[in-house]
Amino acid sequence: MIGHIEYRKASTLEVRHAQRTIELIAVPYDEDTEVLRDGRVVTESVTREAFAGVHGDVTVNRAHDLEQPLGRVVALHPKDPRGLRAEMRISRTAAGNDMLELADDGLLSASVGFQLIAEDWTPDKRRVTITRAKLLHIALTGDPAYKGAKVLAVRTAAPGGPVVRTATPNLDRIRLEMLAERAGIELTSPVT
Image 1: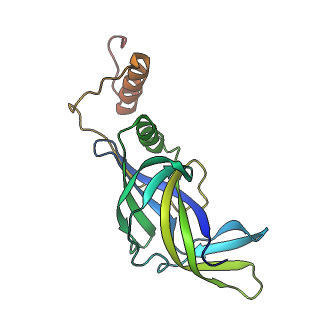
Image 2: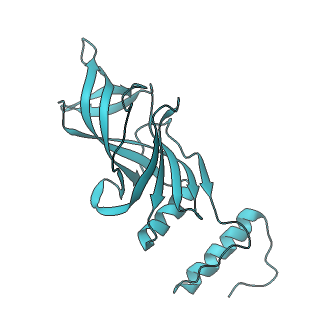
């Protein structure tokens, strides 16, 4: 039905901790996925022109819950040949910190909420192509619909950068041990 809100999932591309940004393909172009429409499963794809001229205030939320905001989209790149590429700034909150870590670990993907403007169905009604849509929000979720949507990169603070102290010393110790392991550094004494 034209005009109603649709949700589609994709994957994260890049997380930049220092800048608190995540770069991702929100919706890959010309990739088939199966979705439930009007009570039946159909094959759907999105054209390269579907989000042409996209603009406006686009929020980032947790799992399409508009009451769980995480940040804002700071740049959209609809001409990327892979799909609608988005750069998002994640708010400096506990939930935002969690999202940066989960995205960095490859555990989160993107899902878009969009308003359908135009679509093209095959005569047998088994395949639909989204030809025009308005982006409403991007959700961070663990279950992407499109396999071609993926994280581009994760940006972390440079070595020697500011140290963040929290009220969770055990979590700090575990994170430091994980960072050391990831960097191939052997700690000479236990972290306390």
